[in-house]
Length: 415
Ligand code: EPS
Image (cartoon, rainbow, N blue to C red; front, side):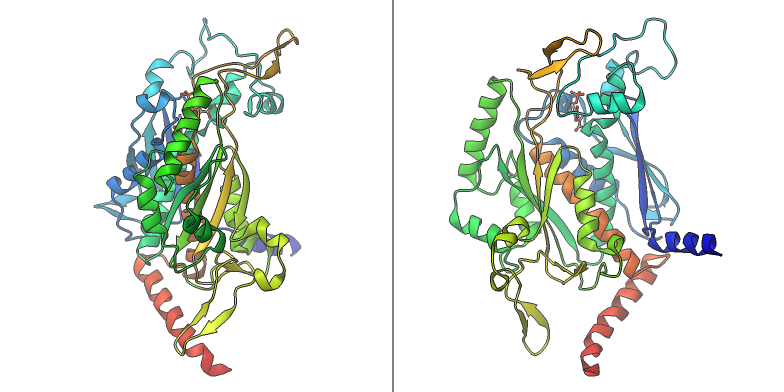
């Protein structure tokens, strides 16, 4: 009886949609399977490829991005441009595999590639090697590489297509790289107040897409590019912060009833799961800890038709539930772990101190990371949206959403 009960509880807490990615950084390809999508969602390959191209751009990427030109091939779950409700599979070819066929051979080889024995601090080289009992750090490098995030961006693109059907948009921009923040006080003010009137994330995201480092301010862009050039010259790398937002999310996604139903918890988990992310905030985040409640909470207003808030410092979520205002996330990415002027490490073979291993890598990947944050945000919001407005087809979900909007209007009569 208890066993049965536990089984049911687990089922209830399951997400509506789930995905799995597979593939090594220099293996043949990346594969992703999405399960739980409704039928009759129009899916266009080009819309997904645009997101992949956004992830590949940005000043400070390494040579690998010149080799790859990511695009998806859909191999299941879609017929005549519309989802079937069955698992949707997408593949992304690693063009670089051509140069790695022996190093990444699936079959055993007599003359295997030389083993990597010197771990880079900050990457998964050492932790993964201990955990999986590897005798070659290459085994850790391959799957821990941020190459995997290409598959996640493809998943996020599908989530965005679904959300767009309900006028929900997700976008991002880079706030800082290497400690260089915008100088413009209006921009700073907007970031600090998270003002819903000033934040139209799609417009901001489009402006950011025009910048080589996905920032909103030209002067800041110039300063950042100079700083990246200097870091490159020094054999160093840089991190940064980014803002991601979801607009048009209705009130009522997520819940306070249990920890794993909280929308803010799910979003921060999803963002923190991205390679090199070290911090995530919702709304005013850490800053709200330093201020009195009167300067943190968002005053409630009513204009005769609908409810509003004077500010959006909560970042669109209260009590684990979406408020209807933009969901605003700020994330911090640490600098890339591969340094051309390496810091200290220990050779696992000789156990002697040595310089950490150098290898081809990016110098800065914050602009790409912002696009990946969008993907994980879109995925999480889509999942919570489908938990609330579940249905087997897009038509069923649309009816459920329309009925909810009517119910919200009628509810006030009950007070
Ligand atoms: C990465 C190292 C670099 C990056 C890679 C992530 O790859 P490589 O070792 O082939 O030069 O370019 O990112 C991607 C391949 C990508 O698509 O984003 C790492 O070690 O994490």
